Image (cartoon, rainbow, N blue to C red; front, side, top):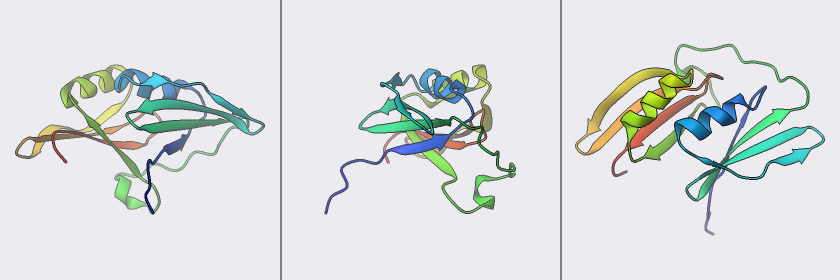
Length: 129
């Protein structure tokens, strides 16, 4: 068996999270998918899609934690980019939080850790995996 792709879905109370990811990571928005339970807005991320579900009814908010590893479950995304410093700059300009400023993880690989406006952690990496 082969997995050809992996899409990731987030839940948010508004479409502002879609705007954040579209601007910070310069992603193209695809056509939204409307369901009786809400709207799924989608962003092209290379071969993958980042989906943001905006439910018709206001979703509950989880209590924030100091670190993403303090709770079980899907706790962070990793975005591979070609300019981590530019992403960090756009994140700051769009109300995101920079937990770890860009640093050299290993030779030829830079990393930063961001938190989006909804509290989702995003590891941003530039270089060879």
